[in-house]
Length: 334
Image (cartoon, rainbow, N blue to C red):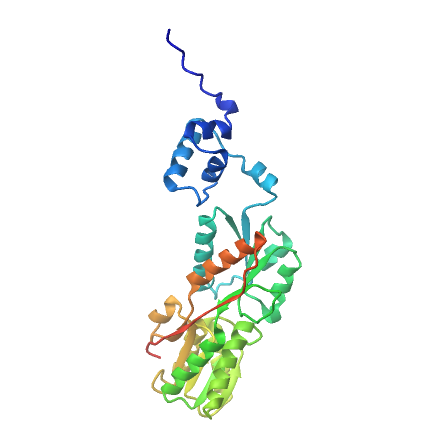
């Protein structure tokens, strides 16, 4: 006597246990597979996904997160206000964001991107915060700190145990910039950048101490926004003050360096024949500018990955530590 096949589960009542039984795996494996968890092999994830799709099953993400009391979302807050003269498509913050997003996605986490004012006005539901930029005198850090959420910072690693920070070795970057300008015969130096930002203060510290140790003269330090227009205006003001001999400039970013070079050329001072200039960041535009700008390179992709790894560890109760990344010289024409 033939047996009738067992009836298929009612689609309207299909459960995770049904999917697990048909796939020959555990319920937790189904849950992980449908959440994109990296612990489940890709082939198994795809097989379970197809079974769930065939039966019309959808994981209730909201209910799962409520049970876990987690959102599986990380808020990325950009301290830098967007403006027409400082593009969001530059390596900072775009390359950092790429590293963050890739790492979060690989761990099945969402990313919410916002600016500091929007974050203050309407903070998103999140398990933790990545803050890109410490702000003037660390004001942005204080704002994020008041939320009570776990947070990590892209910026200057200052030894403060209250903060988990990932950043480049800015003091070393300043020293490398000084060494390069000294090797080009520089004797009268200018620094262009805003040291109220900790990263810039560290670059200036490394630069100043190295040139003073060599008995050379720091002619001036002039503040500038992180823009080409800012660098141009700063150098024009400096030249208008008739500061005397000047043959070497360290700009705190490549965008600033572009403005500095334009102002020097406009004043009849050829770069690099009369004045050597070095920037910071190794932005794509530095290689395309004429003359191509010598720069200090930061590893943005690695920085983004580290930020994501550390906030996930911190939000899960772990104890990550701050990390400083090396920088290196990218020599070009200036």
